[in-house]
Image (cartoon, rainbow, N blue to C red; front, side, top):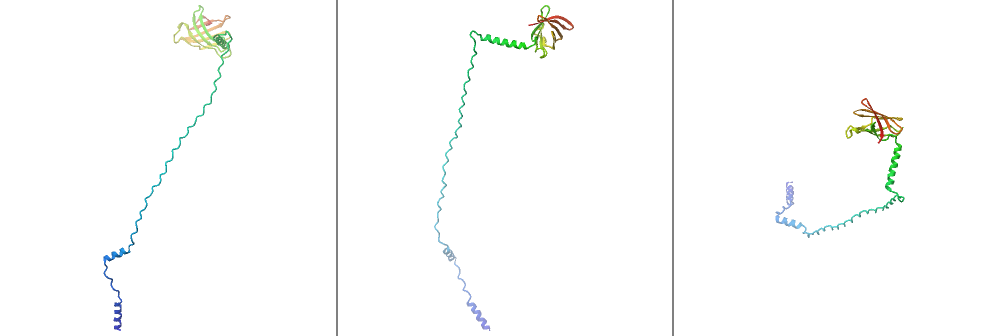
Length: 211
């Protein structure tokens, strides 16, 4: 039995692998080189061709300016015909006659007191001038202004009438020059107005005529 065990041990010893030969570094490098595939030829990439430069677009033609429409011709105005005058007619005299007729027509529409009047004493010495505006009976009151003939140029020697009252053939004018003055008149058949002026309580006979 013991002999059999020794026989198995010997067989196991004979079957053990042979130890590898010592490794040589030069041989290892040679093996690696042998396994490296041969160098492939280097392929040089062709140079990249730059993209073709597109030609610059041609400049756009300038926009055409709008053409203004030709103005519509305006026909010349017809000449004003010269006024026809009869032979021997004077244009200046004709114009003056027209102005005079217009003034007379306007005066015809005014009342009888409209215009300029002078108030004098019985000796004919001028005392006051009245400028009256008479729209006519039933059209409104008489209005006006006064001026003192004895104090011409003085700042307080003129003004407006305070009142002008007409009643039939009678007329009363009131105004103030330092004191209240009242002129009471009656129309005569000759067109003059006679009466008196009262100032500071004193009455003085007067006559008013158109001037």
